[in-house]
Each structure stands twice: as structure tokens, then as C-alpha cells.
Length: 132
Image (cartoon, rainbow, N blue to C red):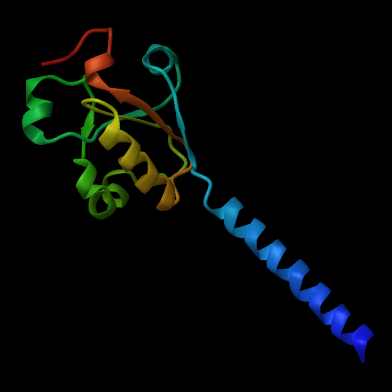
């Protein structure tokens, strides 16, 4: 009886460790943080991408990065992203003013199943031309 008890406890311990590892792997983010320079290289290259500004309309109107920039405020990502960004494998470059909201938006996109999200911080740190 003692051997059966030890065997059961060992199996339970192994199962609980295995489940914990699965949860850790699931919680990894599916976006990467890149520099402004890396984002500019992508924009200047031949790659297909979408620039996503997650600031407010007023901030966007004062100036934004790129001529074909998509605006979805960070707090509306979960309700608007799937309609505006139907391809969940498309390359999406996300920014805001300082980088705080772009990280939140990138995390939201990743949790929604987007697999090629690159967060590059804020327009305040953008050393290149800004559209108005």
C-alpha cells in the first residue's frame, strides 16, 4: 500500500510541474520590441508592413510617422483591430507617444493571435521625419 501511495504522489507531482510549464509557455508574448532605427529599416525596405499609431486622434493630427499610418487608439484595439487588421500574420509596427501605450497595444494584439507585431516605442524618440 505504501508503494502505491508513493507512486500516486510522484505522478501528481510530475503532472503539476508539467502543467506549470505549459502555462509559462502560453504566457509568452507574441510581439517583439525593436528600436526606431530597426523600424525605419523595415519602412525603407521592400517588406510589407502596417504602421499602427495607438495614440488619440488629436495626437495623430499633430503629427504621425508615415503617410499610410493606421490610427487605432490603444484602448480600442480589442474592438477595432480584427476589422482593420484582418491578416493576423501581417507585419505590424506599433508606436505611441512615449512607448507605454504601444506596449499595451502590442500585448493586446498578441493576445488576440497576431503573430508579427513589432513595438518600437514613442514618436518622442523618433529621430526621422514626421508627417503632419
